[in-house]
Image 1 (cartoon, rainbow, N blue to C red):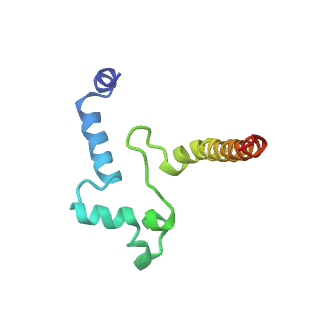
Image 2: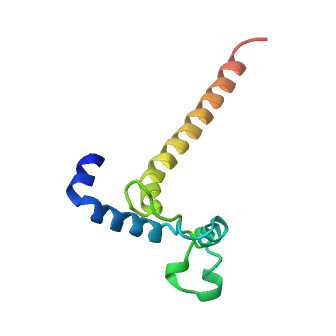
Length: 107
């Protein structure tokens, strides 16, 4: 699939796509500046929505699908929450049943 994509867009398109990725993910900046931007510290100075980061609840964009990570995690978070609540309830019911059975048996 990647090879087909490269053949379809050609070398000039590939260079443009790489330049766009470098700009989007800030690969042209030093790692410490990338980290500060990802954390969202620049938002406290400029208060621009483009500068939001982890501290403002923005987890960034996925490099694989180019979707916001918040959307990707949000789709899975509800199912995880439901499974966790059901596990807690089943555990509580099991403990409660064990106490009932243990009181019914003579010592």
